[in-house]
Image (cartoon, rainbow, N blue to C red):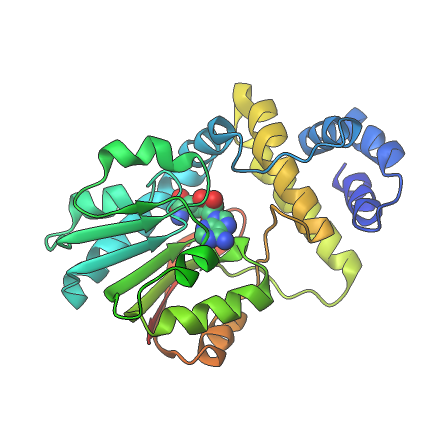
Length: 280
Ligand SMILES: C[S@@+](CC[C@H](N)C(=O)[O-])C[C@H]1O[C@@H](n2cnc3c(N)ncnc32)[C@H](O)[C@@H]1O
């Protein structure tokens, strides 16, 4: 089933007609193929974060609860170790990683500012402690930021992968002037030797992700995973510019940071999640 899906992904990436392969994969039982067929039929330009319900279900079920438990615990420990007073969360989503971290740390920051471009911020606003929320991308936020604004720690959990690499490097360089440390949590996805290997891996991992949702699989696959996968294949927004953890470390170094620690956080079906803490 994922062989046919992988063939379809290759065609989608090349803007070819993937429908026969998608139909084959769907008939073999692929949830992602069914969702992609719908998306292609509707020439769907949905943003993965514009259907907040699908993303909210996605991160609250499947393999995500233990992942987020581990991420929040790692962040909570970090606030204690570093004595963080001013915290900035970049691409905070609806606070799934941030709020439990703040709830369990023994040294909560005095102010918590957040940036989130999508409507996910609406759900978070009423639950935020002292601080400010900007509905902006990181790039737009940095463009309007006063030169003297500073945070002890900026954190970004699974958010920097949403930004195209060129823009991301520029933003990370700019951010460096405003933070003492940057902590990122990202997946250590494999490096691929060939395009075929990449399409096979994407087919396998997206299908596995969709399978964890029982009755809500169609919502998650159609409303979140399919737009994300299409963006990733076609390098359009929304996308997932994921990379191996070694590449994240290199990117931080290229942006002028010094990597202080890289710690394994959780083995997730998609790929293992790691925390990188870097000094600005
Ligand atoms: C996978 S979600 C992670 C959300 C949250 N950090 C968490 O761990 O649950 C990626 C987030 O990055 C946000 N995002 C996308 N593009 C962004 C950008 N250019 N700047 C900041 N955040 C962005 C999305 O809206 C989304 O909320």
